[in-house]
Image 1 (cartoon, one colour):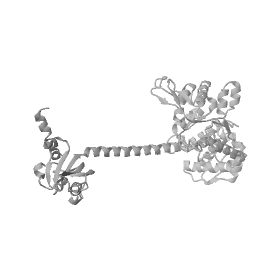
Image 2 (cartoon, rainbow, N blue to C red; image 1 turned 90 degrees about the horizontal axis):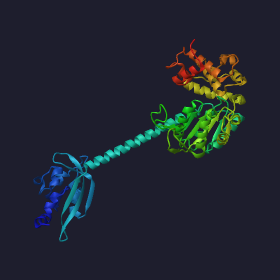
Image 3 (tube, rainbow, N blue to C red; image 1 turned 30 degrees about the horizontal axis):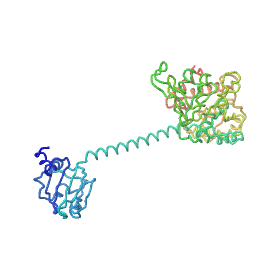
Image 4 (cartoon, rainbow, N blue to C red; image 1 turned 90 degrees about the vertical axis):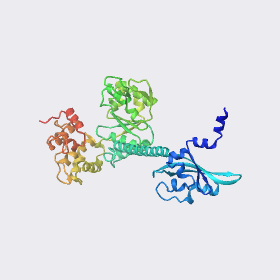
Length: 474
C-alpha cells in the first residue's frame, strides 16, 4: 500500500466525510463543531449554517406531532451532561425546508485524558423503513380483516347448510320418536358410520343434519350427495372429483364431495341407488379413507364421517345382487329407523305447530295454529307421504286461508290430494300441490308473487319439477 493511501486512510476527517450516515460533533456547550456531507444532504442544513451554533434549535426543536422538544430533554444533549451512550429509534430530525424525517441515531460521549469533552451523534434516515413497516402492518391488518371476514362467511355458509333441520320436522313426544332421538344422541358424539332407514318424507335428512350438529365435527362442512340425482358416469366425478381433461367437458380440475367434506360429514342420500361400480369405490374410501380423482393418479386422503340414508330394503338388494354385501355391513354399523308419520300420530299437533311457525316466516302469514277439528281429521289420516305430505297440505291451506286458524278446505283423500283417483303416491300428492299453488299464483312461476317463492324453492327447481311431473298449463 502506498504512503499516500495510508496517509488518506489515517485522516479521520476524510473518513467521516466518506460514510453514508450523518455525523454531528458537539462541544460541552452543545455547539456544533463538525458536520459531515451526509448530514448536510439529509437535513439541508449546511456546515456554514450550523458550525458554532446549537444544532438542537435547527433540526431537533419539535417532535413528529409538532409539539415542542425542549433542549434540556434532548437525548443528544443529555449525553453531554451525563456521559452515557444512547440509542434512539422513535424521533425525527427537521430539514431546512420545514419538513421532517424519521431517524435512528446514537449519541456517544467523547473523552480525552479521562475528561468528557463533547459528544458525537450518528444518524440515518429510516423513513423508508418506517413506511415499509407501516405498509406491512396495514397489510397484516387487512389480511386479518379478510381472514375474519372469510371465517364469518364460512360460519354463515355452514349455518346455512345446517339450518334446514333446526326448525322443521324433528319434533315429537311419542315413545317411538323419543327412542329414535336417544339413538341419535348416543351415536352423534362418535365417528361411527350411521345408516338411516325410513320411508320417503319421514325426515331422514333432518336426522343426518342433527347427527352432524351434535358431533365433534359440527364446525366443519356437512356435504350432501343425492345418489339418485346423477347418472352412473357423473356420480363418480361428483363423489371423487376429476382432473382437467379426464373426460369430454372436464375443462378444469374439480374437487369431489369427498374432498369438500374433509374433516366434516358426508351424507349419502338414496344410497340404494348407487351403481355397483361406484359401490366398490365407495367401499375402498370407507375402509382406507383414500381415493383418486377421475383421470388422476395421485392418492388423496380424507378424514370424514359417513352417514347414509335409504328408503329401500338394502338386505333384499344384497340377496338379489344389486347391492354389495361388504358395503352393506360397512354402512350398517349403527342403523337408525325413522318412524313413519302413521306410527306417531300423537305427534301431529306439535308437528303442525312447528310447520305453521315456518310457514309464517316463509309466506309472511300470522297464523295461530290448526283448529281442534282439523287436528282430529289429520290424526285419522294414514299419511302415505309422511311429514312431507303434511307440510304440503298445511302450506296449501295456509295459502288459501283468510283466517288465523287453519281449517281443512277439502277432505283428506287421494281424490283431493292426488291427481289420480284414490292415489296415495307421493308424486301424485306433490303434483296436485304444485298445480294448486300455480293456480293461486295465476301460473306465474318466478317473481315476488310467483309460485316458486310461495313454495320456497328456486325457480329452476320448480320448473324442473313441473317438467318431471308433467305439469303444463291447460
